[in-house]
Amino acid sequence: MAETDRQLGRRLEQVIMDLLERRAATSSICPSDAAREAYEGDDGGWRALMEPARRAAWRLVAAGKAEVTQAGRPVTQTQARGPIRIRRLSR
Image (cartoon, rainbow, N blue to C red):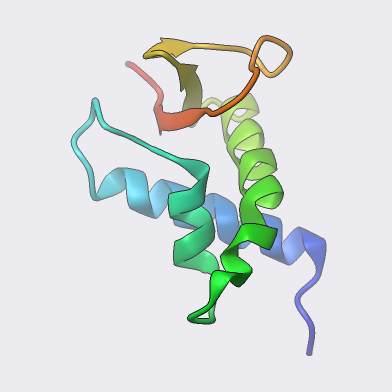
């Protein structure tokens, strides 16, 4: 059975949180880390998961579980241009 977009989104959210839990509190990940971790093949197909991984990151931001940064500073979705990083929300 094929995975729905919603199921993929939830799985990517969980992958992002799992990756962040394995790192220091101040560390961040790239959406490509989550895409590679979630991809079930051994070729370059993970690239197709990049946009879904970015969308998952923004949902985690909206839920108060993570923040997206550029140059080490938190950014909003409308401010973000180019590569982003994801880290646990600062407490």
